[in-house]
Length: 118
Length: 436
Image (cartoon, rainbow over all chains, first blue to last red):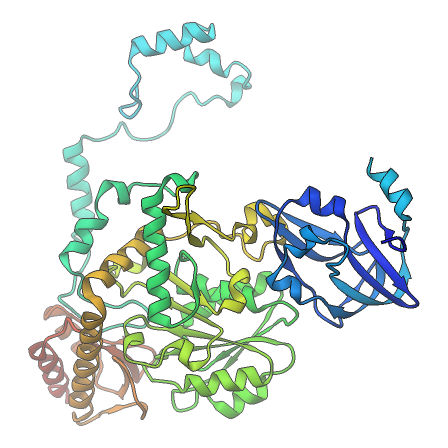
């Protein structure tokens, strides 16, 4: 978790070279409540910084997930289709997509993010 | 004072005093004086007796036929007496859609049973609580399939009214709709194959089709899937008991007009839009869905479920804005199916098939009349003849018979249900025989 970066819209990003892995922060899953469904995107989809690339359903609401980076989706965590609760239980293990990076937006370190959430 | 508000003069005075004004007019003091209506230019009103007489005069102009030999989307099936007796109960007839659904367990249970019965009829995995009619069901099916692809192919002879509604839905979403003309009354397979491409969201076909013919729906589903398109099967709920189910044919979505299930023809409505799909597409299905669960005491209970699909939660991201269902008509279908049972439904279908084939046989034996298409049909068929003229129509009319629907100068589509009797069918044939 140390090397994760965070966006203002509460996604975490792990950047390895030109590959980025994206998930939801603990703060996000806590605010959302029990997640019952995630509307997963597809491999090959192009995503853009600040634009919604998926949405997440809790029992009473649907929330957009905004992309912290731009690029093309190279992998999707299909496990989340049948077990969306993994996002609540282990937010930093439950990755949503991996992306071939073309650009990244403003990202915070873990410390900066924790300050941001207060 | 209006006859419909229950407040007495005394009630009004108490309320006015509580609010601190002297008259009802003072409630509107903020409205510009020139906008307040001084008089409504309408009649004084009539007594109940006079109203009844006026309406009787109007309805006397209706012609109610004893025998209806016309289908094309609305079918004259027998409605057992308990259906109207039950749906006429005020708890069902006047109830509005529940806003705190969990309190209306009875209504939810009836919708759950409706959904279950629709899955049994179609073989599909999931049904919603219904939509307005087959037209909206097809429109919603298109919306369900339209994700990354924006073309729709209508294969063969689908009811033109259904296509009209589908086109309205497509127009709103800039979806291109391509109609493949039928060949010999059924889907032109080669033309269909050529029309489906990587941008085709779904292929829509109807069986029995508009001409009454049975299509090879399994083959159509396969062709659709080969190119990655979904297959939408428009089925007939009575024929569904004797044909391969949409599920067996590989349909992704199965829709139908539920009117034959206990609803009268009613000059076009209210009807019932049946919408079912495979489990994979469940979350793309619009409208209400009732689910079964347990309450805190472990007792079975019903709820509205998967509501995060709906527009009151998903808002502009919702696939559809429909947030209602045809509750009374859905209930009618439940009652009809429960009364008829599997055996009864089968008997209805068998009677429809045999009576329609009898009429087709007898009519095509008349000189100058021939069956327009070869191929298996359920209970509708098209004939080609010059003999279906005004004289025939007038004679049929006098006998209380509504004949087949003329679709052009020579062709007409005829339908026979379990209600027709042999004597009447023979009379129709003899009327045609008289034409020189």
